[in-house]
Image 1 (tube, rainbow, N blue to C red):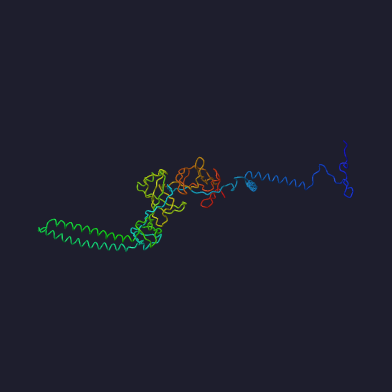
Image 2 (tube, rainbow, N blue to C red; image 1 turned 60 degrees about the horizontal axis):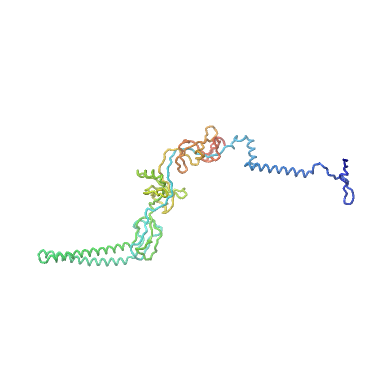
Length: 432
């Protein structure tokens, strides 16, 4: 095929006014594009590559800043070559001490005695002599009821008594006269017997009159209502000026004895035997009462007694402890947490509870080794005994004086290098 000339391929371009522009402007087939287009293409490639790198780093849990920091660390000597590879931990020393075996439970404060004070006579309430919430002693005067009606009854009974006593005295004089006459055989025996019966009748009347007098005096005493026990007075139930009756069921006020006070709580039946055995030998078992958060100790007392049967529905037994409660820290019907000390273990190895770690098959602690010049940790399997608050008894695996890790254990493995701190001071063994 014949080759076409450049002019044939690209004809001359004619300007709008008819002038020919020639073929100076040509499309150069196979030539590079303009410089601005090339720059945009290169920039787009770099953006795509950058997005790809970011996606890769995010997918593997590392940010670009972390990647840079890792690179810098490797330049400083590689992983594990400097202080940056060591883990800061806080340690505590295993010591010998005493650990208590406690039984914990939820209990309720119960007054030693609760008395609802009622009126034993009918009448108008004249005076209220106590203040609500006041602590009273046994025998203190609390209320007064109008006693004038009972005073009149007393006077009437005393008058009747005097009348019948005079009749009795006269009958007794006649009886003595009849005895003398019968001895002289001046009167028949029947007359003497009749007079003797009359004297006995008058004696019965006098005795009945005396009972009426005593009853009237007792009613007057009942008009002055006193405290039957020592304790705290509650809110008054009847106001001054009201009529009160012996048949009223609500009462006038309630007194609760809070010094001492008791706490009733329960323990599982499986824990009953050691408690009962110690009570039978006369031992006093301490009981502590804590608030509902188990943080503040409210009072300390002793176990008083146990119930006489186990509740079959719950498998528990009720126990009662007594507290002096001199500071009134325990209030009736208050819920408290109780700790009954059953046994005190002496001279056992203890570590903080925070040091105890639980694995899938065993229980272990991290023990810090500082003898090699650099602090490392060793995982040791332990046998845990009694736990008392923040301390735990270790029966095997740890000796007194060993340093165990209590903070930072989540980052540790066996033989990990650590920077140890104890009591807020850094241990320089192993560097910083």
